Image 1 (cartoon, helix red, strand yellow):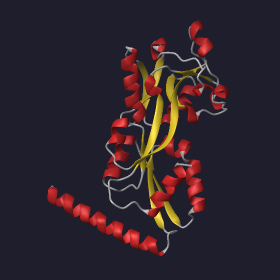
Image 2: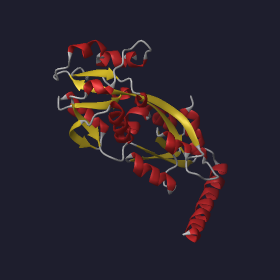
Image 3: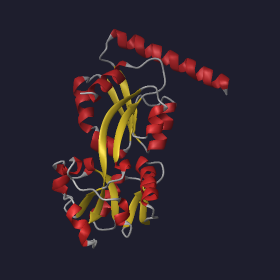
Image 4: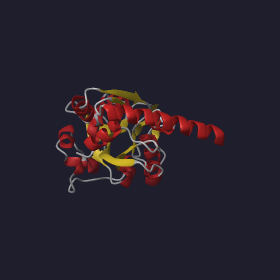
Length: 250
């Protein structure tokens, strides 16, 4: 096993050297392979990807869409130049990581579900969320335990939000009634809009078409996520990756 690891490391070093020599000839060439979940690629970094492509048109951009666990495996094998994580334990294991962005997890409840009257003053509309109301200090928040009678749509294992929800339910002290489990957050969002059950989603996903839902800010500490860009553990950071990290920081 040690021999195979050494051979693999030598191969990566040779590949990195070839890339560095090529990029010294012309810093506008190269490639960038980014891994992300459907949520990140569709809702958090499209503007960043467009800006990168316009600034560096000769760098080939490749996107790989997978769940969190699969992306980390690809990064470890150096099949990715960069991916994202909001898990502090995972972030600490990577020596090369850069703060990227934050989001807030909200509870989305179909308007068709009868809610106790005391909960309604804390409800947010889609317009409230779009105006940033959920992130303001004076926005009311509720503990998840107040919603234990609701049915839920949850994500399957392998997604960060699945793990985070397990923590939320455990700290709230109840086992949820799970109506459905699926792999895509966007699908859970649409099914909630059609009244199937409540679900958790990022404030970045809320649109003006979400009038069929009420949103609640939760007081649980795990509802604020800070994502970092993670790079493979290697000596050479390609020019394209460095350029993308610079855009992240703007």
